[in-house]
Length: 76
Length: 235
Image (cartoon, rainbow over all chains, first blue to last red; front, top):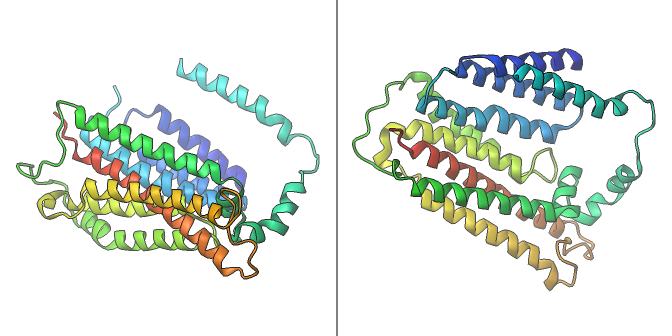
């Protein structure tokens, strides 16, 4: 279970790194942090899971989306 | 280039993490047993993570809040001094085009629920997972949702930057007062001052106060950063 989720995290991170569309990168990064919050919860660390979900999936996604809206969407 | 950097970092990570995964040794148990027996009595928090970062390692928490204050102050200074941008202009903004139903529902209906969850995480940080920092971040997410929704109605908005800065500075003062309270009661600094009393309630109230101060400080600081970035106009 944890191995499957970790493989998902690696694939999502690689896609977020290499994608040319910054909006896709941001959404995949948010999904990745939700999955890693699930991993933290499965490893009996609920405090870290709450932090990861709130910071990774909530706050930083909002800020990234706002910055993409203010600048360009594509990575040159 | 970036592929080579990725491969190098994976190799380095496996070199670092390999010795922890491969052997079958027993994990150290001294610190775990110590915390399990003394955590509630020493700090008043039955959640052991809160017991560590508000009791045994409270210096680190205070340093972290001061770092956050410095970051917000620096961002405020930079944004105020940029010549091309201006903050807080109320008039002559074009109407937001992407004002759809889902944005309205998310910002109007979901944000109060998110903020309520943030308050819960802050208040019950000594019992359940969570604490000041996590609750503050959740609260800041809720307030940024509201800030996203109010963008079309900027003139009648009550969210302003001065209030958030005031809340942040006041909660820093509250943290400093809470740090100094043990000196009055004859305990050492950053120790929970009520450990010599037999009742458990004053200790718990002290920990809740600490959690609330840190949560308010984190929430106001992060909301202030978000609002400052949203008020920048891009030329």
